[in-house]
Structure formats: C-alpha cells, structure tokens
Image (tube, rainbow, N blue to C red; front, side, top):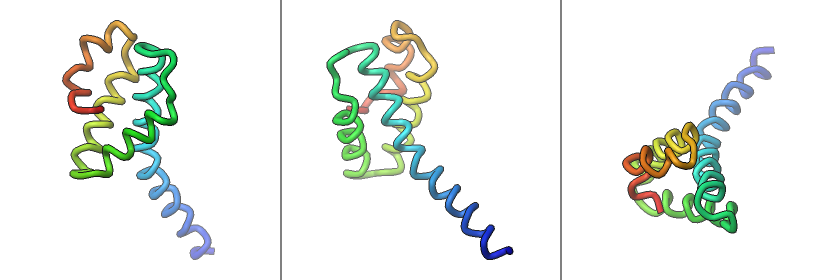
Length: 92
C-alpha cells in the first residue's frame, strides 16, 4: 500500500510548483485584459510572460511575476494603476 501512496504526494508537489508560475501569468494577463485592453489575447500574453521568465534569471523573474500577480489579483482596476507599479515593474 505504501508504494501506491508515495507517488501521489510527489505528483501534487510537482504540480503545485509548476502551476504557480502558470497561474501567475494567467492572473496578470486576465487583469490586463479586464483593466487595460479588452482586445488583449490572453494566451499570447501568457506565452510572452513565460518566455520572458525563461530567458534568464528565472528565479528572480518568477518571484517578480508572483509579486505582480498577488498585487493585481487583489486590487480593483483603478487601484492597480497606482498600487501595483512597484510590484509589476519590469514585467513586460
């Protein structure tokens, strides 16, 4: 029984680590579309952010995306314009 339960926690952990970045890009791009450009292609935006993160200094850029997503995800559109400038500085 033990061998069958071991892979599940490992799978959940790996999935959580991988989905963190993807949910951050989704949050940022959805809020960009909602607040700034209703014609924004969300999938293309997410792809661009993932490409940006993977180019160099991945850990720092992943942290930057997480900080930005945390800020924009909890604010109204008008609050984002002023409150999230610092958190999202450098995010393309």
